[in-house]
Length: 557
Image 1 (cartoon, rainbow, N blue to C red):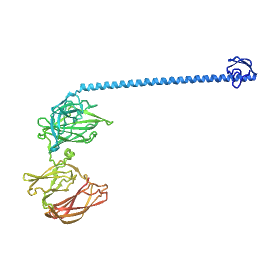
Image 2: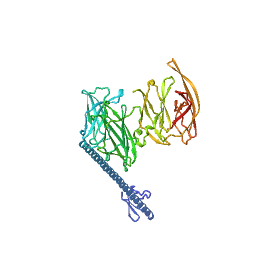
Image 3: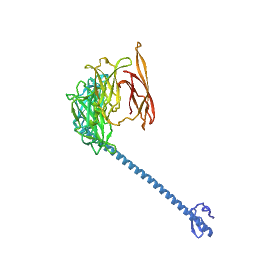
Image 4: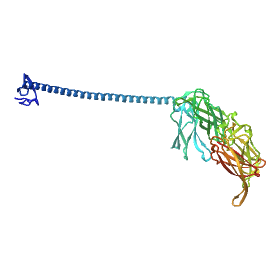
């Protein structure tokens, strides 16, 4: 029999299981056939069989390695899944634990607040209904005074009012006390809105959740270095100056609560205000202007107090409230009264004595009798600064006209930002029962002073021409009146190096004795660039004697 050396199979049965049984002899282990081969064939066959065995061993080894690698990968994936599951369960456990801990902590905090700051510790006085405002704009409010008897400072405490008509519930309104922090023992009033147009027979008050400030420090109480309570008609204001006397801290967050009382100690008004500056450095200062809502206008103001809340400004920008249980500053007595027509600025009211202008240096020159363009009587006046070296800032006052002891109208002096030494500001006293006019009285506002050269930018005003004319006015389609006027032309030049804007120019006519006989305000001039000129023209009515000269007064801002 022959052996197929190409396929290495038995020639009898085709099996590939051949085993060398002797020299040049091979036995088929399947059918038992024996084959003899030549030496070279035998050697070649032996090499082939060895290659087959080696290839089979390599293939088996590769398959075994592949199976082992697959098993390792499967084990790795299983281990990774197990680790991930363990981690996930751990995270969930930590999260649930933290949440439970947070919940327990929150419960403990709530329990602490409920235990240490019970709502019953904020005592509420008997509420009363008041009208805030005047006339048709007055609105009904519920006035409640709250007193802190908790023994701890309260942050933004609030109350809720539930209104009823009989047993029917109408509305609920809430309001926060007008104090960022209410110190132990302090009281504070609050106004709660009432239902509009509804019949309220009773109300129930509830204190809302109480809490201490998140963080706070104790420190010295803040007081105004200068304070004034002023009243103009029904309007009441508290103006005050705050100075940072500390050398080691920046202060900010100034909050002022001012309260008014009658002679029985009842609250009849209060207001809340804030510092004009958000924060002030050591040695710096700011001011506060508090508008106070009045109610119970029939009662006079017998006393008033204020308290200032403030904070330390941290380097990071954060703020820490400063606590002081004795910060309320009380004053007996009423406000300073001023004419309601005066415009009182905060800086004017708070000026130090060295900053004040002496009102005796302002003079109202003798009035000049005149007539307007329909021949009604009027008076011309001039306000003059007699000071040799001081500029008066924002001069103002009220001229009251009298016939005997009876007042017949007022004229307000306003419109000027400053008046230099020797300058004259023209004024009309408008016609109103002028035939019985006998006397004038002036109430000056508090005024400040400035040293020369002052705030005004220099301009050159030139009058280049005047032209007199006669005009007429038809009154009620039945009476015609003639009057004299003068058209004044000129120019305004800017000799400086900067642009000058908001120029106002008063053009005055004077008779041969230098007395005022008419004037006109020119307030439509454009901004003037350096070295440029702008023209002006004004038609000025002549109310007194014939004019002989023209003078001007200007100011810039």
